[in-house]
Image (cartoon, rainbow, N blue to C red; front, side):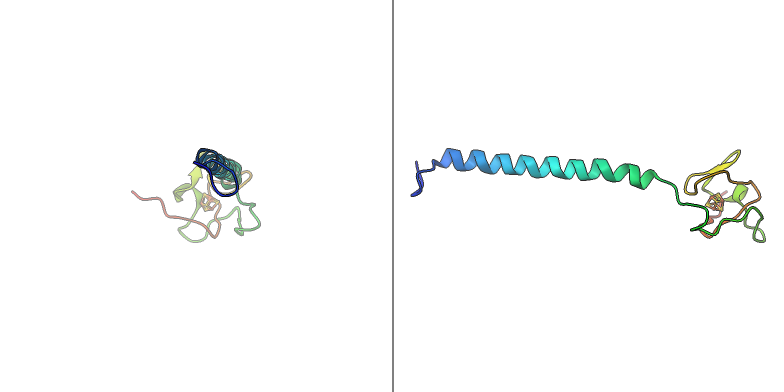
Length: 92
Ligand code: SF4
C-alpha cells in the first residue's frame, strides 16, 4: 500500500519507529547526564555550614553525616560537631 505521496505504509512505520527510537535515546541521554549533577554535593556556603553545633543539632547526630568527616549532601570536610541548614536528625 502506498500513500498519495508515493510513500509506502511500511516506510511510514519504519520512519515513525526510528523517530521513537531517537526519542528514547534522547531521554536516556538526559537521564544519564542529570545523574552526576544530582550526585554533586552542595557547597558549604550555600547551606551556611559552620564547624560548631547549633544547640543539640550537630553533624554526628545528623542522618546525612558520614564519619569521620564528610556529608552525603555537603561538599568538603565536615566536622562531627558542625551544623548546617539541611540538618536532619538521625532516627534511632
Ligand atoms: S548538619 Fe549539614 S553538614 Fe552536617 S552532616 Fe547534616 S547535612 Fe551534613
